[in-house]
Length: 374
Image (cartoon, rainbow, N blue to C red):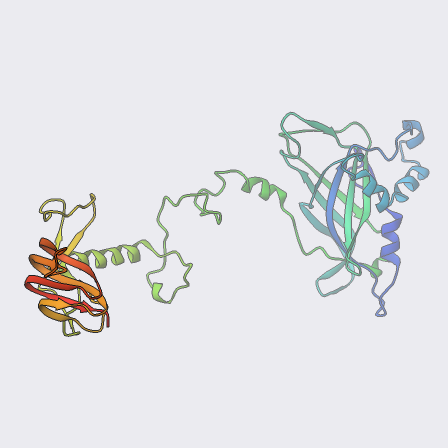
């Protein structure tokens, strides 16, 4: 029995058949796991008056218990129909606890004549402002032999019992297998709990304000503390680095940018060499023609020696391109394209790269590099 003054409760005949039926050759019966509960406004004793339910001594009449014992999984499923049924809330149990043990124990299953069921209806079971009647509570189990949910027991409220949104309601029910001769045929799997009170607590936005959420919805505002022995070089790619590691990396990069790094380029002979200098400037002291955003570094070489992605180059002041390529002009001078022809073009004071098509003769007033794409 459970909540003696508030509910009439019973284990169903269907559950007892599963408990007593011995399917396994080793003599062990069904292994049953408490799954969930369901709250309904449907009254399985609808039409019965109080005098028909209780006798003169205030005890529930045997024929009333028979009605509850006869209630089946199929009848419960009809009541759970979203369109026509009376079930308005379903959830996992908040906890299942064996009250007394007997028989044998094997593989995490426990024989117990009585189990206490703790169920919680949270504050948000219904939308704000709504209410429902708690008339019947279904206790749903699963048997390990075929993984089939079934109605283990039900409890019918003795009087009007309501639920209002915004208020948490909690109930404890004890159900006992009264036939001690059959208790050895069933093992209840009770190695779990569903602490809905904790889940309710965890939904509050300030419940764990010092933790980082997996979905990235909470910003990190404090320090992530690591042991000084943590090696970031050996850590997984998804490991969050500590602040000192990041600061050290930034300091190293800043030191390199401030003048420790030299840029390498390829010269006309195909060997790698350093420019004469690398200059890093801020907003003041920008060379003419250069533009930079606030907070950016600007790097340029003196003289300008761009990378040459070709096999060879020819230095000089005159060249006729066979295949086409480009002219590299490291120092300011005049460069004439289509030299000696009526449509020649002269670029004065140019420093940089000029693309040239095949068959074109180019002259320069200072030594430049002719790169023919052979």
